[in-house]
Image (cartoon, rainbow, N blue to C red; front, side, top):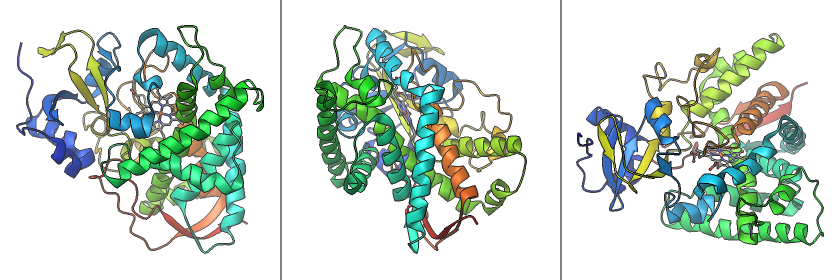
Length: 421
Ligand code: HEM
């Protein structure tokens, strides 16, 4: 058996903080490999990239998630004892609960709420000189998600709640003040969610049985036990938080429209509905591929095995380079160019385009909300290109790839937003 190419640094943690999304891709290039060994925070990791590596990573007979998510990420982004950390039957039953919220009818219901909220936001924007698209999109998502999930949300708390969801997402791989802001946001939101679960269980709140708050509050796990209040609040947040996080993708949509006026013009041009739908979908897919969101994912080796002549010892931590795989030139021609047309008639498989994970939804860890995310992005893009006239203010929209996670610095400032006459 050969030895896995090794990053020569004694520990890569500081370089990871400095290089962010480019940390793993650079090392794969340097060592000309798809498999490498490195140390982070004193621990040994095997890092993987590319389609075959993604197929390996998503083979549940090879890896487990238990013990793979660092505490810092659980205390901010994911919460403790949620679906992401489960394996086997416990995971399968919990994942089914999430997938039951993703039927065509439920996704359409959420899109209806989003359209309503985008137009309500437009009424407010017309009174203002400029708006920050990121914040507005988070508020739209937060209002729509709560209404759809059956979670009461008062007008005066919208910004706080949306900001808290955003802080959890934007603190997970950070240290210092940003990390602690994320922990405070999580603690406050867990209390809020816990209150909602209690009120549903006591019969004081009566969401419909198809709404997420009810589905989570009444879920019974594979061990025949209902979720305890903490688990239920973590899982209800696992529905609401990522919907609000779609606001980040909306900011990236804004960035792409700003950076590529030709695409913007094309999306506004009068064409038949089929062509428009194809263009919108291709643009959204390219935003998900091109822009940095999830940097990498972690798991641990279930039982020792050999792959491509390399030993993967039991318990070893493994990272899949998500950003690097979505920018792999063997999978995407000219990967650092923003080119939506690459997705026109795209015939990809479950492992070669993985911004929200790869493999299967049921029985695997691929993101439960991927279809919902794509639909919500299409609604946002259609709204921004067809329902409103807008201009981009002069701004610093730079996206710093050395920060994980990252955003356009300005949040995308729009001015003179008006309804299309
Ligand atoms: C898992 C990304 C939106 C629910 C994941 C994973 C990624 C991801 C990378 C991990 C896959 C893995 O562990 O292998 C994103 C991004 C989103 C998004 C970038 C856009 C903002 C959503 C939405 C929902 C959602 C809207 C639900 C409403 C989940 C759940 C899991 C998950 C429940 C855990 C799946 C499991 O462990 O089986 N997501 N997601 N996500 N996502 Fe998303």
